[in-house]
Length: 318
Ligand code: A3P
Image (tube, rainbow, N blue to C red; front, side, top):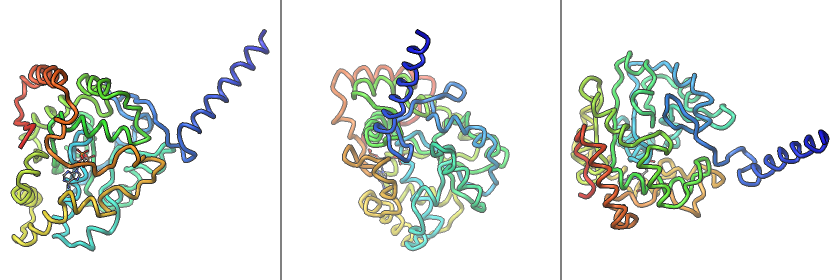
């Protein structure tokens, strides 16, 4: 009896290992579950190496770009890099986004290829990406008085974009159906937690800390105005022609064709481009193609309830 039980356990373990290899990839990428830090759902690999993130030492010249996932992070990063390099194409194409501006809390399954590891070999001033809600941002950023650029995007377009991203990113948990996904978004179960708490957290602190709070919809509506605003925040005096060049270089169509800004360097074993693209549509209002009338009504009611204590001027159309 004992022998049988043992045999069963060994077989089950082997089976699960084989399944993992088939389902995932030989390099260890597999759709992994979420774990938590202070109640915020984060990928298991992020939680596993969390202590390194928590103790990261920021320097006062570092700049943090903070967003909820799919709010236009990559766009903001490209805008910032082109501003800092005054629209110099060659300099901005020196490396892919994730190398130029590392993702603070992200790490590979083996912990080696971490944002922190890249940051440790870079000299300040560094431009750092994070999706962390404000309460999880390492203290050293606030102690050093770092500038932060936050970009918010309306939640309907955000959840649509996140849904397609989770379909294609084989490191993320299975998205399930659109209806299931929407429910998870509304109840804060997706990676990096509640969109509502995220946008409110940075909004409430924007005047106490050096936070420039920007909106995807504003950038889409008037990129010249927004790029000028970001350049001012970064203390960069740029000519009108430099601003125009930056707007051109960071337009959706330009970034989509730019291998250093479109994540085409991420292998197909991680980004399944047959499911969706990273540079998907880049629009305001694509949610109208996904929400049915009933979902929209439920979402609106829930949104009004959750945002009543913090009226942020979020626009769903422009
Ligand atoms: P869609 O999926 O709606 O197309 P993040 O960088 O935070 O992951 O956000 C990705 C979203 O920003 C995607 O949205 C992507 O297409 C969009 N995006 C990236 N660069 C953009 C640009 N230059 N202009 C407009 N949208 C852009």
